[in-house]
Image (cartoon, rainbow, N blue to C red; front, side):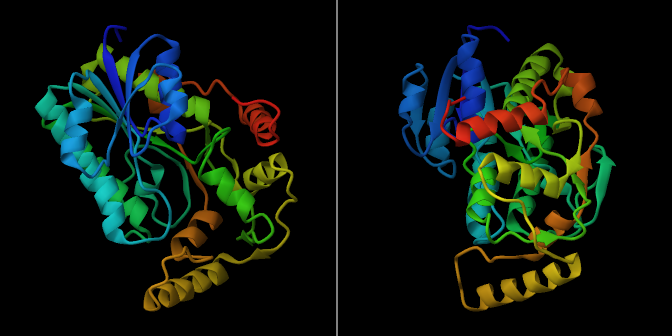
Amino acid sequence: MQKSQKILVTGGGGFLGGAVVARLVARGDRVRSFSRRFYPELASVGVEQIQGDISDPCAVETACKDIDLVFHTVAKPGIWGNYSEYFKTNVSGTQNVLAACQRCGISRLIYTSSPSVVFNGKNMEGVDESVPYPEKFHAHYPKTKAIAEMRVVSAAKEGRIKAVILRPHLIWGPKDNHLVPRILAKANRLVRVGDGKNLADTVYIANAADAHILAADKLAENPELSGKIYFISQGVPIPLWEMIDAILKAGGCPPVKRSVSEKTARRIGTICEFIYQKLHISAEPPMTRFLAEELATSHWFDIQAARNDLGYVPRVSTEEGLRRLETWLRGIEKF
């Protein structure tokens, strides 16, 4: 990638988007961020900022003017909420980015998807990118991300844009504003679901950002990569509950002691969903079917394609990442 190019990062003030922006700025790229609010930390490093909502096609097109490459990281995560809100951000927002890219003559897009788009509620062990989408989704996030992913792939296959789709799994690390805070906030209420032996992939934030930069560079070198999908992770799955305990330890909290069976958790999740929907409760239920399945099953993926095509190698180990996370959480140093 030539340094004369200008790059747009949607969600440049977010966890992943911010890490991608930092990489781009460090190597001398000209960067623009599109987010709903202004971020002083981005302004301090010379990042141009445009405020707007990803569901507003006019705002997205404005952000895409005079841009050569887009990293689309914006998404509405979570396991509960109105389907329309998930669709508006994850599907309509992505469609707006695709349309703006076409109108503004942008040739390349790196789209951040999620392995949850293929999660079928059962063990997924070492599967590769050929695994199909499930017949039914138990949460709005994976369903809308799957729809958006399919639209990006279609646009690439039709030649409307050159795009690479990345599926980083459970991103974590310093500055995390989703996974780590959720775990720590529930430290005293967490209950292990299942036997605790289920393996899962995660990916440290620096490695996830590296994968995005590599994808952009490799796509520029080899347009034949357009339309391809890649799982991104640490490359070595570990017991999910061991990872949760490690994050708790980094935050100075005790490990999870109590446990329930997956069957019990699913039953509780079904009841919670029914009650919350019936009473129109907007808060997230303590358990859902999707969450029970996610916490009790193995979900780890073959990243050989990313290694081969993108040259992706997770340079920060899980152990080192946890040390950095602990340092950050304890306020000794910011990364």
